[in-house]
Length: 576
Image 1 (tube, rainbow, N blue to C red):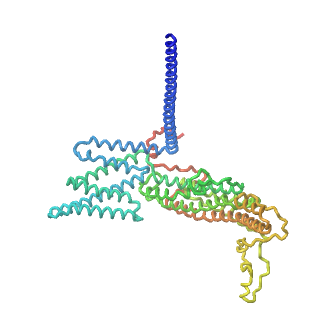
Image 2: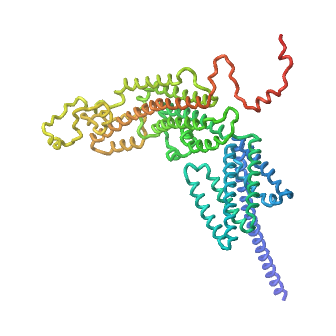
Image 3: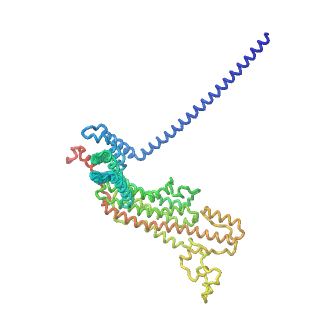
């Protein structure tokens, strides 16, 4: 009996220990699951914190790079705060407090970054609202007359008029010369439909039109007052600074292209963004690309600048279009810089020893050309005219010296062994004998110099067959590697030597292409200088400062007023 009790107690003890072990394991598993859940939650919060920190850092950098954006945001908040006071307007016009949302919408839509854009949007909104309101009142009166006549045509008149006005306004805004008034047509359509729909339901067409017009005028007035009165941002100044920036960018790209070409700099791997003409951090590439890609930005700034009133050094009827014209002439020069950069990126490259022959002349042209661009950029920035001396004298002299050097060293730019000048022409007594020639294109009775330079298809065959080294100095392109591979595999050595000679001639002629593009760049500088002189005459730029004379500072009315009110020392007027 005691033995049975002892066995029963032992079995109960084993069951208790097993159950406690199971409970302990279950607690460990649950604790692990809880820890895993907490870890995933912390990871998610950590990722959100990282994203938030990145956004804050980028916003801070944007504000540091252009503080005007911070000021503009604060001005918009102030304008919205002022216009929101209409909520508390009860008397004497209760409709104003009921439809205050139109004033808020006007502030949000009209308040633009620059003063010119704000004036443009405000004018379009006011014109669209006023014209749509008048037309809506006329159509509403016509519909009311139809209803008085006993004919139920008022609903039909309203629907047909909305369809007609909406279609005509949409079609009119697509007209090219009316593109600047596209926003006005949108406001016109919206206002007309709103007045016709709400006026029909309340039979208060006049009250609806008047209240809407007053609220829009109030919102536009507050926007203009705040935007112009507090740290104004002018589109004309942005256009001016953009043109100056493009001058410096093209000058830096020109010098960079010549320096890299003379130093035989080769890209190990050309960035895909450059090949697809996308934005890239390469200074040489981004310099001329900003000038080429600024067309749309210049047109936008020009459309806003013509709305701005006179301010600072910009007088009434300032010739903003001539700034765009100067930028277009600069862009015409930037195309040549782009082509020069393309020579650096091309597969066929000129040997380094041939480049060194023209190093001094190429360097002089690039230095003089960049000097002209920077000088014009400074003149545009300071709004000064050119001096009495010709700004192009130095660069034209350098280009002429380069052309003479090319003429003197022309034998280095072609393979003279492949020339066919001097070979006796084939005499054909019968014109039908021409068809008996195996290669009709091999007949050369006479050769011009240009034909000799361009006829690279007929390369000579190396009669000795002893030359095995292919002098491809400075060429690591795909075409060079493919020719080298073919030379090691093909048994027909003579054919390979012909291909090698052809590639050698083409690589040397790439230097001719580079120098021709640089000379063409110098030729295009004349159009740029002419466009600048036209701008300086129409904008009435000041004369260049004379040496030894203090340059007059250009200041606005506010600066002159502060100087006038500044207290002066009494001793200044006393004679010593």
